[in-house]
Length: 179
Image (cartoon, rainbow, N blue to C red; front, side):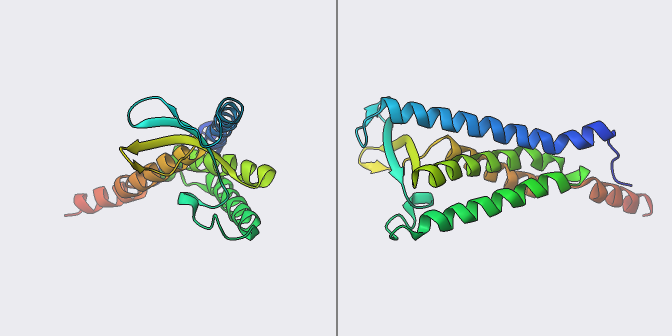
């Protein structure tokens, strides 16, 4: 028999994911505002030997994929981000009790996706400002939204690989009892 949570706790789960998403969106937009107002475009501000603040704009997707595509990618990538965001919202509200471990990862992915979607629709590009490097090797610049998406995706994979659903645990326990 699947785990039964009190109604308030079960209904709170999707809202927790949405709250995480809103927090990520606000943090992302706030840090991007600071970057745009305080940094000079493509002029690194050294923090450590391997970390700079450097304002840059990305018209493409991850790792500047499609950045030189001529402009059509703005609305294509915005549409993809909007569709994925809508899918995640529906997923949050349809999560089974056994999948509650996905709430935080989905909230992080949703917040990051919407944070970058806001930039893409309002500016035509995504503001990036975090630059990591080793000597002359630079990782592509990124932002808080990108970080949330990456951490959320890694957490999602972790949950998918390690968390057994309650139904699986119960059925394996019942099978063990009948041996």
